[in-house]
Image (cartoon, rainbow, N blue to C red):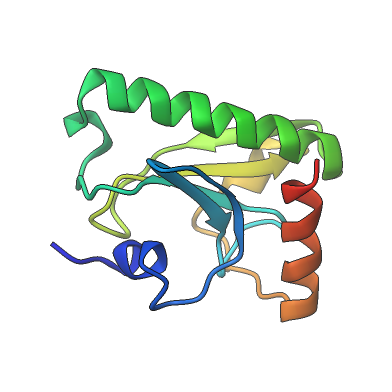
Length: 129
């Protein structure tokens, strides 16, 4: 099954990649709730995160942790919030959000938009943390 995330993985859709290895990818959400909102995905398509094999799920979380620690170093926030919703795209993914309060994780809020220069700057900050 091909998803929008599959197209990001294969490069047919551009993205702001903040971290990548042979099994996982982290990139900026282009419709973020807050500046620096990152999505972390496995490179193999699994619709529901809890359908992943235990080892892969563990590795995904450890990869997300590495990204979150970098985000915390360079983005102005109290913590990095973590959520899994799984309804938007049929490809398992974790949301990492720099937060200063619980309202920063309210997915019913209007999504934000930032110019590409700002997205590139945030991406670079996280990559180089």
